[in-house]
Image (tube, rainbow, N blue to C red; front, side):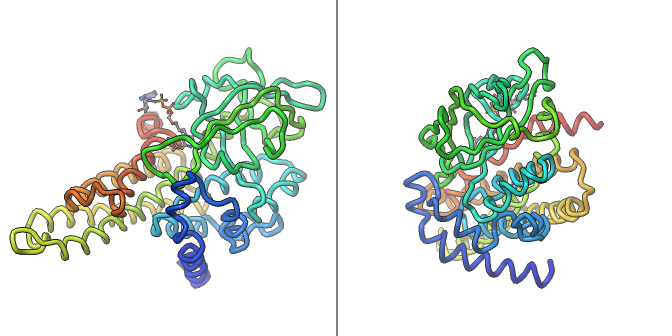
Length: 373
Ligand SMILES: Cc1cc2nc3c(=O)[nH]c(=O)nc-3n(C[C@H](O)[C@H](O)[C@H](O)COP(=O)(O)OP(=O)(O)OC[C@H]3O[C@@H](n4cnc5c(N)ncnc54)[C@H](O)[C@@H]3O)c2cc1C
């Protein structure tokens, strides 16, 4: 932390409290944030806070991103700015100067909402099973196929899309990333936001591509066939951001539950007077503290460019497992009220579950960690 980050945190916190938190019931009902939420977040500096100023970003580091993710998790608001930022980092890392100047400033202002589209009905953990193709036709690619479970899908204006550019190449070799500007694009269609068990305010959609033509210059990376390694490299950004949300949620669960058990009475005394309650919360608080120490260490190393894939996988797997254990214990300590949607702990229980599934399931991450043994 630094004074600049503390100031940024207080700006972000106030913004979320006034602009996002009051609208959560409506966002949940419409299954997505308001479109204007993106331009408002852009104006306050939440978007692309770790992208250089020359491209419209905030010129900060991942610490700024972590602050925003923490504040969103702290308020129980689902707004996938970290996915949006992640798209910007694909462009920053693999895009040409022209591509960066074309897309990044508009993303920073929230005029283009970013989505990453990798998963398909038959390609989740195994992305080499992708069936969406991009066929070269003169100065264009012609895209056919569909994607599923895409976060920010409903509002997406810019999609980092994984496609097969070489259908004959085996495994990861034929995969490339193409940037698709989605607004008013012929042949492109978004399905209604998918019904989920949690994260109801977050738009998660299917995307359909039917002979969609995009300029060949939208390819990311100088040549075709680099998509798989680009995804494996940049996925660390998302994984670490999910770790930040996981630890903040765990800490929040302990805080909420500690308060609850002091107020709720059973057998003539507050729940905290039962040794089981105290011991469970003591265990949760300890685990959350360990999680925080590991996370902070990972963030420092990430900012220094020294966080390796294996440690990032460890962080995402362990921190999200830890989050789910803690939140589940806290639901138990709430009794029946912990199962009622109007109680924040109930929502945290359904919302947090997906952290163990997306951006690489925790099983896939253990495979990755095991490869280093
Ligand atoms: C709310 C939500 C948002 C999402 N957002 C996005 C997004 O923005 N962009 C995007 O591209 N995708 C997104 N996803 C998709 C997500 O990344 C996939 O769901 C995830 O990668 C798992 O793929 P799958 O669902 O096909 O499960 P599968 O791959 O079918 O896996 C099923 C089970 O088998 C296990 N398994 C599979 N292979 C192995 C193996 N080799 N060893 C051991 N176990 C294995 C898995 O761990 C899992 O437990 C999102 C998903 C959800 C639910």
